[in-house]
Amino acid sequence: MKFKVILGDITKVTCDAIANAANTTLLGGGGVDGAIHRAAGPELLSECRTLGGCRTGEAKITNGYRLPVKYVIHTPGPVWRGGSHQEEQQLKNCYENCLKLAAEHGCKSIAFPSISTGIYGFPLEKAAPIAVHTIRSFLKEHPEIEKVQMVCFDEITKKYYENALDG
Ligand code: ADP
Image 1 (cartoon, rainbow, N blue to C red):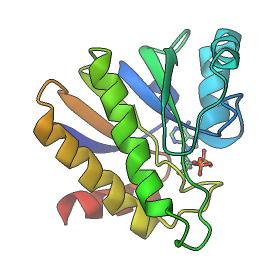
Image 2: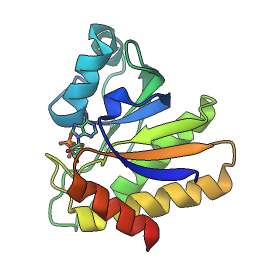
Image 3: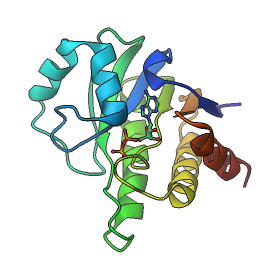
Image 4: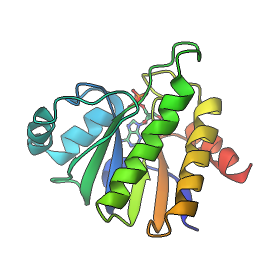
């Protein structure tokens, strides 16, 4: 299958690009962002410093350095503020803009973490179907992308994405 949900650590995934649930400074943070920076090494932060930050829902690409990927695509997800501040649209934009950048850079495979559902508090039951629908419709239009993996860090998160994928 082209689109898979797996349990794991995204810093260990080998593919063309991984997405990073970054913050708008792009200067590193906690959670998956911290793990990606630690695994990639200090060159990643040096490149991120040249980018001038990134708006919520947009995406910027860097090299992967010591990670087993060519590129890291950084996207600041929305902070959940009750749902009436365009959080759902912004989350959709994150997935779409990462996929667009990946395709523009000739990537055939990309892995995503569960954007915004950690520190940013986006409810998983809403985030998972948004991610799945956005990725699915992009794949329909872009046959050049051969593989997309949702890399879930815990079983509960994985269950939500599997349910969204089956539903
Ligand atoms: P956000 O600020 O966008 O909510 P977080 O990093 O806090 O981002 O969390 C996003 C998701 O990434 C959470 O499900 C968290 O458990 C998960 N996560 C944390 N570390 C890793 C990792 N190394 N690989 C994959 N997912 C991770």
